[in-house]
Image 1 (cartoon, rainbow, N blue to C red):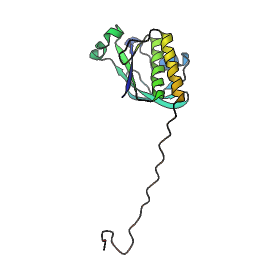
Image 2 (tube, rainbow, N blue to C red):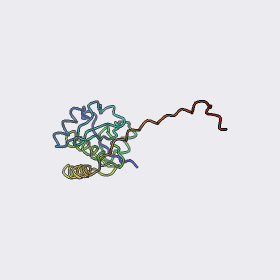
Image 3 (cartoon, one colour):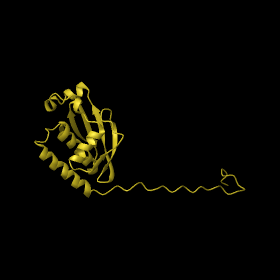
Image 4 (spheres, rainbow, N blue to C red):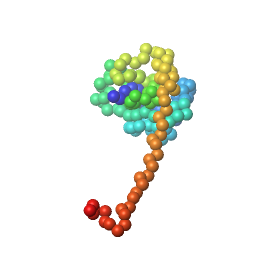
Length: 166
């Protein structure tokens, strides 16, 4: 089952990738967002570098009224959202946590894990992010898929067609 975390923002405060990256760096985290990331149009998996290792997280930009209205009790007048999705990987979780923390700290985002109330304070949120980063560091790195060895091809013995069994 996928996990979801929403970062609700005013569209006027939604940063460009470079501003977002700067906020992450200034917050003291080693997460590098993909240089091709475009926050206003992102839909899908975004490769990242977490503490120098390959990782990433799904990100989806959303500004549909029905989606935003379903969270109105949490977000007030904010009119857009970046949703982060990940599976069981703590590395992907850490990417989502760091990226959403930077949005909260520098761009006034309200962050909600699966519709729950936002963290009580930025200090509490930072502590959760730091825990996720520590847990991600303990997670075993995935090994690249083994290189498949080519199948050995054989040719039927000469003199007798392959379809004759007698």
